[in-house]
Image (cartoon, rainbow, N blue to C red):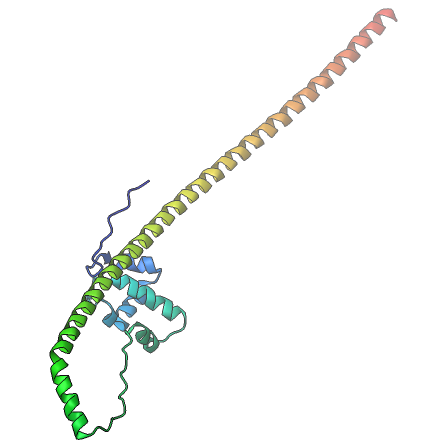
Length: 218
């Protein structure tokens, strides 16, 4: 069994040619070029060139585009599905405070401000690191899935070629068997004719012998 090629872990690096991606998606080259133009802002690589190269992330995005279009989504709906959702913060109703309450709240806020800022910065840093780790993991997973998909298509193609070759060999064997059968039947018919002719000759010889005997004793 062939050794599996090494998986490219950096999914932002262009790895696949235009022909490979069109074959993988099972679409015409003109269709892929239309998608490049209509959904270019969702692709990492520059696909406006004559011979574009696609990253694994690009292939994953195009697979999503293809599935959404097949489900009947228009370009606007596809773009909405591919655009990350943002949380909207609603404004709370203003709270009426007395001057003393505002002063106390301001003093407490001033005292807590360094700690709050420190906590916020720490939380933001941790969140950014978590996002980076998640993005790295997702890129690796997308790269593995896309590469496995390519490998599976290649294995299916090889299996289909072997099946076609087996069918051709079987058809050739059946043709030879039919030819051999026809030859054997032809030989059997010829042999039967020969045997029948010999039987007739034997009958004629017996009759001649009987006639001669009658002549001798007549």
